[in-house]
View 1 (tube, rainbow, N blue to C red):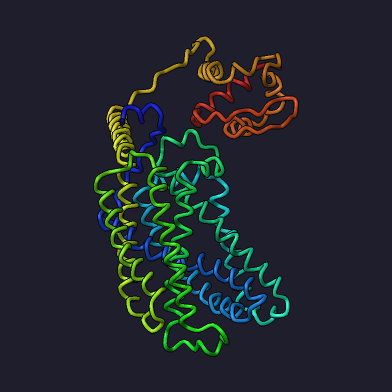
View 2: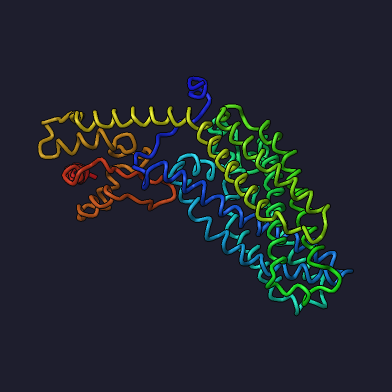
Length: 446
């Protein structure tokens, strides 16, 4: 497999720097911080989608209009937590997989950079929706347009992240990808995206169940027809439906992943997480179809079970990443070791510079300058004829009484006239070389 990858895959050298923390600690930090980050990302996206849906229903039902307002108030808080908690996984993955992460980011080009303005606009729109709620109460279509735009951005931005994270796992695809939209068509992107959106709705359903079910929450102050039980039942139904959809799409996600990242450890981890989720889904089903007074009975168990499932799934994600990149990392380590070996040999055994100058001693004091001219300048200049550059006699007419000016021009040439090309810098020449060269040029008779 490694020999096949060697032929078809770019293999850059690794960055020869020590990790800032032990690898096991960075991996743990990556998994834990990413899961915390992604939960609030789920709440941000799911909350925005639900706000839009409730605002549209609120055009005819005031209770749903109020429900949209209550959900919208949570979006900006969850957004801020998502941003803050995103720093640790970003730094961790950059340290552990710098070559892969930044290669994928480079291949997705401007779209990766576009995340910054898109996220900024989406964030500002959620604030605008929240703080102009009462002002736009008589112009609900405009309010809906604001949250709809934010929703569209929040639904598109994950595509960019998924494309980047997906692409970094497959160095063998780097040579075939030509930008974001090309990488978007890789087989695993859309199944993972749909799985992620379902996760966002499932997490948001549980959050709404808790948030509006708190005893301290003044539910009756905001709603006339809807009851706490109604909202809790709808929230559970959303979580259950989204979880069932995840179970359906999970195998599709697995089938579209290249087999190079699979291992028995990964399969056991994923199946264990799924097995723990099944009892939680059953308890939600019973609560939805049971007596209203029993709907809260197993909420804690459901949250714990689904949280454990999330941990298993997050661990499985890392197992797949580590396994799929292992062959390429070995090749990269071998290439880095070979480069460092050759570099060390070159430093320890410097090659003496060869004397290329053929000095004609009959030229007297300007002999060395003539030899330097022959090696470095004669391809472009002749004594009295225009070649690529002007003849030497023209140089003499300009710098006859200004040797220092000629030496400076040789050191840092520019472009004076449109009928001559730009002269390249002769950085290989020393100060003494330029002195000798200027002496020779100014010895030419006009």
